[in-house]
Image 1 (tube, rainbow, N blue to C red):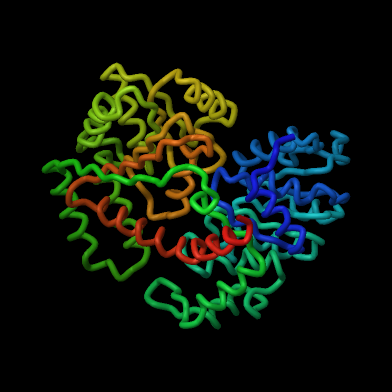
Image 2 (image 1 turned 180 degrees about the vertical axis):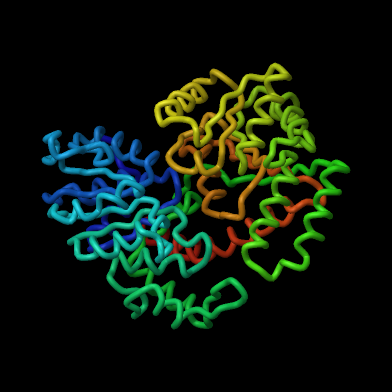
Length: 433
């Protein structure tokens, strides 16, 4: 059995004092093992709900603890494995099987990557709030629980406590504590103080910095020139949508088109720029020579174009996309970690959960979405507690394109989402050190 770090022992102690705790601990701080140890004396079965890639981590940690477990994604009653102490299921499978699980007497339910239930309209959120809020013990696990704003806490805390800041549902919370500004819901004055007090009593918050793990992240930006074709298409799209920009559906389409133009690869496969690919090769052969690199992409067309480009240059690489099976993903990851090839190309949505790509200390973002969750999760893929060198993140930005706006917005969101958690983490640090 593994020896817990001091901060993990403190987290276990917190879980012993708080019946339904939230473990808001950043990636690589061992919140999975912390939750297992905190529930070591719970005799009833424990249900873990997590993204499919994260379940592999749970299985590994449970094996190391000598705990019996079963994967409910593939388990059927005839398999005779219902006596397992721990049962694991991914959020997608829970959508269709949650009613069957209501017949089980659960001692605890753990939601890992709990932001998956932040949307009150999602089927999985409705299922969890309807079926599991009366379980004796309930845990939330997340590194950044409010990536898009404080309203993200609502459904998570409703699961944890049955109410949130005196409100019984998401809609009451929004009406009482937020005001609408355009398409956003902004917190009313006084909410931050109430939220801080609320989380102090219910959440163990820990950042890698406060735990003394790893080094400070380094962010950099490489601006590549835009081609005449990119500039022409960008102007045409802005003009085309100028009369429609007050309609939400057209705004979304507009920014997707602008993002594709910035990446140099249109939806129909037409390539209008290879400047980012050239910069990637320049970095690989120059400043980052000899290093393992992970390159993240928003669009698969971009990834495929870069893969062809690297092949033409004789550079070995491999890719992870939605078409890559779970077995293939595991093998690709293992080969990358062994150093079988220097560059891994990964589609952001595929790689954001559960993959240890820590052989690399540099991640290059060929393109980004507006989602801070996707950015934060993928950044953590190259983090490891035992690495001393600071992780480097490079954004490839096409001059004068929507790339510039996306990177700026992600930076602003990151500061806002971490501000409260950083304050709480400093207070938790003072308590356990």
